[in-house]
Length: 180
Image 1 (cartoon, rainbow, N blue to C red):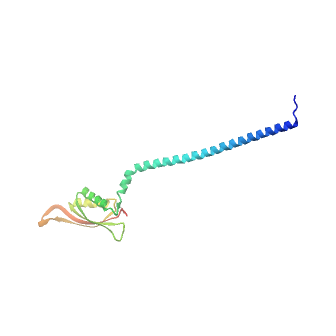
Image 2 (cartoon, rainbow, N blue to C red; image 1 turned 135 degrees about the vertical axis):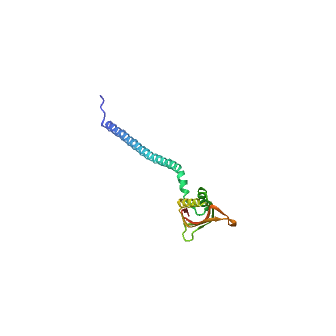
Image 3 (spheres, rainbow, N blue to C red; image 1 turned 30 degrees about the horizontal axis):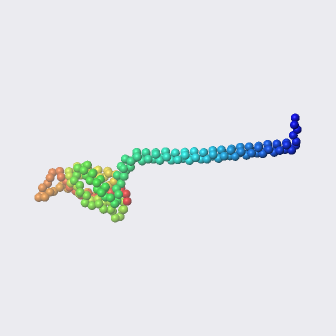
C-alpha cells in the first residue's frame, strides 16, 4: 500500500472542493436558467391566453353586430337627419300610400324656438275614412308626430261640381324624432 503525503491529500481535497464548487455552481446556473425559462413561458402563456380571449370577444362582437344589423337599420329608421328631409318626406308619403289618400307636403321647416322640432304642412284629398286613417297612422309613427291643426271639408271642384265622398283638408304637424 502506498502512503500518500499530506500534501497530496490537500491537493486532492482542494481539487475535490473545486470540482464540487463547479458542480454546485453549474447546478445553480442550470436551475436558475430553467426557472427563468419557466417564468418566461408562463408569461407567454398568459399573453397568448389574453390575446386568445380578445380574439374570441372580437369574433363574438362581429357576430353580434352582424346578427343585429337588421334591428340597427330598423332603429335608424326611427330617426330622421335634420339635413336630409328626403327621408322624412318619403316616410310621410309612404303613410299616405298605405292609407290611400292623395298627399302633398307644402312645407317642412324647423321650429325656430325648439331645435329638435320640424313643422310639416300637408294637403290631403280622399274619402273621410282614408283621411282619418292617414292621421291615425301619422300620429302612431315612431317619428314623434303631433298633429297641431287639421281642417277638412267636402271637396268642391270647378263649376261647383261635388264628387260624393270626396274630402280635402290641410294638416299642420310637429315632428320631433330626428338626429340633429
